[in-house]
Amino acid sequence: MFLATGQSKYMDVCERALYNNVLSGVSLSGDKFFYDNPLESDGEHERQKWFGCACCPGNITRFVASVPGYIYAQQGKDIFVNLYAQGKAKIGNIELEQTTDYPWNGKISIKVTKGNGKFAIKLRIPSWLKSSPTNNSLYTYADASRLPLCSVNGDAITVSPTSDYITLSRSWKKGDTIELDFPMDIRRIVANDNAEDDRGKIALERGPIVFCLEGKDQADHKVFNKYILNSAPITAHYEANLLNGVMVLEGKAKEIQQDGEIKDVTFRAIPYSTWNNRGNEQMEVWIANTPAKAVATPLPTIASKAQTFCNRGPIQNDAPETAPVDSWAGGTNDQWEPKRSSDTSKPYHYWWLKRGTTEAITYQFDQEYEVSNVQVYWLDFDHYDGNFRIPESWKLYYKDAQGEWREVADHSPYTVRKDCYNSVNFAPVKTTGLKILAKLRNGESGGVLEWKVNK
Image (cartoon, rainbow, N blue to C red; front, top):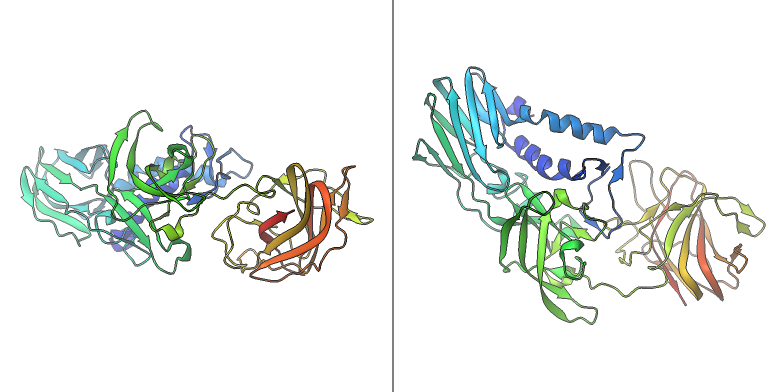
């Protein structure tokens, strides 16, 4: 799109994707991969080793190898400098050398090392120095950036901050040197108000690098219970021995305690591209900047301490037969409260590509409990792979002392209402596990947003 239009916004997206999305898709060890790039995790995400249908890892290797071809472009005799990176390049009969510590530092030197002639060198002004990182209303900065500086052979050049490029038209010769200084202020990003889950939150960015909070760097290993006031100062420093060498942000945050008390704490933020390289921990890119959007760490419950498995099997007599192999499932016991049945802003469990079938989800408790109530919040939303709807019907089973599944007795109706918890009371049972067996609607899939278990 850039080659077709010459508009810098396409290279802004390229740079943003390169330093954040692409690099986060592969571990620092180079042998684990994310299929997707979540902007928030309760610790359930982890990069996978090489897998059978490895389309995405191959795309990463191809893209990284092609990056040199994105740095420069040429139109006639004019040269576009679209990305900033240390290295040498030959463009036609001109050779250039960039010297820089970008993206950690905004100082860039570009020297003509061979060739001469009259032409323009056009230097992209990154969108992270403007009012929107994406050049539209999707994301905007809550603060203003300082102006970039430019000089040629020591002579200052006037820079218009709203321009796509700094255009330097002159007769160039060997030894001519361009100096750029892009101020790398720590900036706060706000999302369009239509992004419901991002209301009352900010993302932190320095230069082209988007940062995140990861539990590993916080004193209590939690991130969702913190909020950073817009007035809070934030500093940046480089740590050579952390994550192969990264810039780290530090500042003061507020932390909500379980009793509602607000505590002052220090936070640390790392580049998003480097998260999940030190084990599974909580992580968030969109950070609360008001107490209303921070969430105190909830106390553990029977459900939250349970292991969740997805399985499928036919009913034999009065109970479903346990599937030979249970697969791990998540999202139903993370203690996030849904806003509605279509609220997919937090993890949930769904029976992907299953339509009209009977599906099961199981809790395996950490010990035996006596329970007499469950509350189920059903998933219901439209999706390109097939719609998810509340089930046609469902039943609840418990594991008896012999390890057999039995339907709970004296239960209240198994309701299938949208946008609320469906509560079922039953005769108390002592058990180490519960199972939901759901009959999906004809032609539709289904899932569960949250499933609570009560004594």
